[in-house]
Length: 141
Image (tube, rainbow, N blue to C red):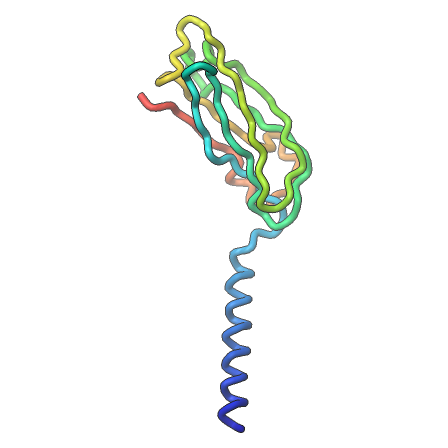
């Protein structure tokens, strides 16, 4: 009987410790990040990416700002500053966005794109991690 009780106590302690360690990895509140950035330069010239809520509660709707990196004249020929809507996102859900690039002279889609993307750039959502909202993208040279 003592052996059974001791084994049960050990199992409960292990279960509690496991739950505690899992809880450490949960992000409290919404947490919006930019992922899966892809540049398409063939028939349709566009920048495609996802905004993901990796937090544990839904986010409010917000905006994302996309603009050429400071001082990059080549990218400015492809894209001006753009602002796009991001809807309410439930935990673990993502929203796909597409930004079309201009077919302007001097716009080198393959190697000349350098953009900063900033989700919730006006800081309207209180997120669990405010340091991961910016994503810098640079196409291969």
